Length: 258
Image (cartoon, rainbow, N blue to C red):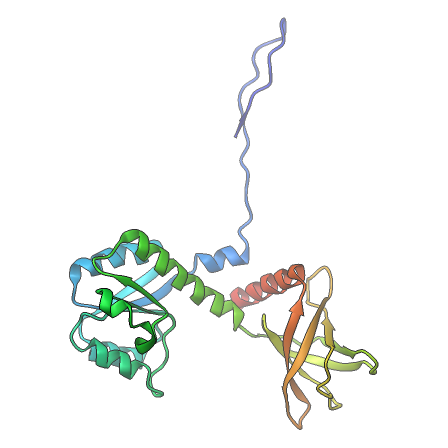
């Protein structure tokens, strides 16, 4: 941005232009957005594959291509792939999709299929979450794959658990507060440990402090599970938006610190 001071009559020389360089801090969530993910395309349609490689590269997703479904299945059993794109016009793709849904096969999320109209209409049978038709519309493919990428990133942060040992207070109206210690924490809840058993009553609230946060967090919660050793799983039912944002940012910091 350039600023110039107005020159008054009789004033001295025109002051030089001033350049202001504004530095925008990169948040941990921005780092998540720029994270490189992995994808596999199972297809023999090289014209469409080349288009996908360009789109996926622009979305910070590495691409590997397999033209044999059984070879792709074997590779999936040995390595972690963030996103799988299957050409259902490929011979053997139907069997591949059935085997992919078997119990012994590691799940790859999300699953995207591409093909003709008949193929993309059978999402329920394939287990796919997204689909687009061939020939590929770049606009549609970018929109679909961007949504798939967002789902992957959201899942990584949503289910990331950070180990943490801080005091936790459990409060329920009409009951004496229970002291506990936090074991691990995620966006959706936490595991705690307490010496005394906790009754699964309604109206439970948990409060605790995050290291480095300006204020403590308080959430309406419920007991998801507990064992005889004093371990409890707590599910967050309601958390104020600002506190939810604070928790999300804090977990993102822990994600990159480990």
